[in-house]
Length: 383
Image 1: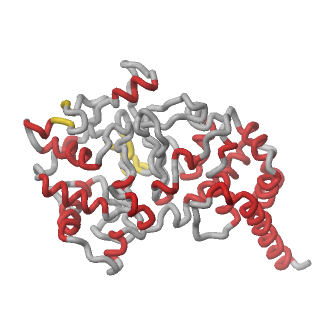
Image 2 (image 1 turned 90 degrees about the vertical axis):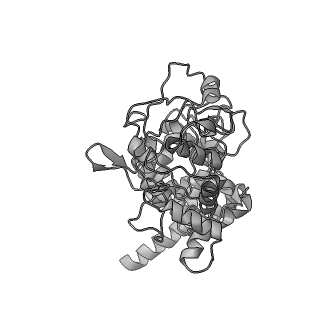
Image 3 (image 1 turned 45 degrees about the vertical axis):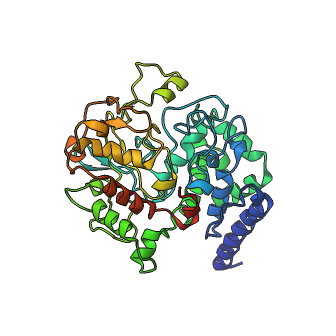
């Protein structure tokens, strides 16, 4: 057999092995479809939905990132998904599970200038790449809680289809070293997350840019406010491209900011971390990654600790920095003052105070524009 023929044979053998695996197990996630027959992507999809890969066999990646709900955690719990309950049914973290919508568009962690970082994954950037992000929940004691890679290997070996797929794609040596197995797992899951299922760019906003949708007057005003300089100032943090209305905009500069959020008291009491605990971030004290605004209207609760339930509350929170007295200093969800920052240091007051007071009509327009950023597959979820 010639070298070319052998290469073609290996390529199609890999595809056949993994597609057989897909056919045999596809019933577990019929709601998730993507546009690739790449065997690595197909394997990644299977891993993403497999609850057997958690220690108690109760939780998969999709448990906290449901593709039917913009890859967020919509499971019913007493804390309104401000944080996710682990595979053991009891463990509770201190941060909200962020949406994986458009996660693959995030740049790897890098230093923009001295002391200023952008990119990376999780709220604090502790995973520098999409691949690193993929394996972290496997071994987190408050998430899927596998003790180590040897247990991952045992779980994968329970299914001949996994053994065949991993060996076909990565070679038989993948089973001999923990790093090799983790890298293979992360490569497959990351490949799945890079498909158009996660990043379709087909919202009303995208269709408007392609001349396929005419925005309403309110959406148009909101768009103008959003991209304005010195008015609403949203684009200081929630614009990646240099020019407004650029195709492929993900509505985050992926930098890290402290906006002065207070503690989510109900969550902190429930997870038992105590009054003295401070979630100060990972790299930069009190700073958390600016999230994408893609699908923001259907991915409540909001902020890294899930402290707000309504998108309008988020807008009111930002507006309080440019207004004084009265109802502007009251959280409408609690009817109490907004609360003191958990971490006061490094708050970017220049940006927070950089706008002008917004009226109710202004905020309605901004909210209308943010609703435009909802992927077509989730528009039925809009409140």
